[in-house]
Length: 256
Image: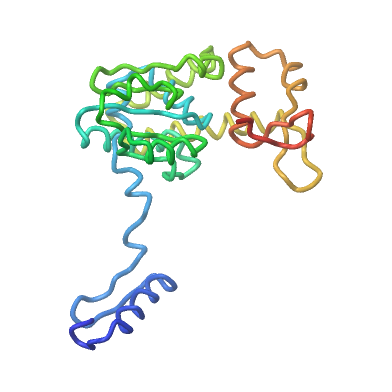
């Protein structure tokens, strides 16, 4: 386009056409259509089945951490391994369609760590083993090279596992181990379970009169007499979904 017209204006016109109409047409190269490049295909580039094959039932720890918007740090000396693994993790919470939490290659430099710690929840990849001594950076530490997952001491209360987690973990493993199922089908199975979970959570919440999300009251949750681990998980999930009613404000809030 530039060689033909000698002007950046024509190039900008093509860019704006893609931005506004999703199409750009040229005589030499045919047409470019944005719809031919579905972002969801990029989201599916990694393999959930590979993650489950490596971590088995412990995959539910990763699922829980993502659902609760916790800080996950992944270590492996190979940058390729770190990037492939980390970019796949958000697919465990497919309903959010959010890959902005992903920081797939971080260095232990002051500037990068400062920027990382400004995020509420994240998935951060490192190739420096020294990060294993920085549990202040994470709630869940994944040593990909050793196939080990560690929950940081300060996160153990929120990450308490119970019967509900076992059920979710079994569903994830059974789906992933089915040779007839593709990665996208496994993601769909997990997503359906997540939707069921969120629907049940919403049913426990009180309707909001101001058009906002329904808010969950802790006392009302306690009255349901769920097992302690389930009650604990639902409480923290409500906070992560901005559905927790606080006594001070009477509105949904996300605790720091």
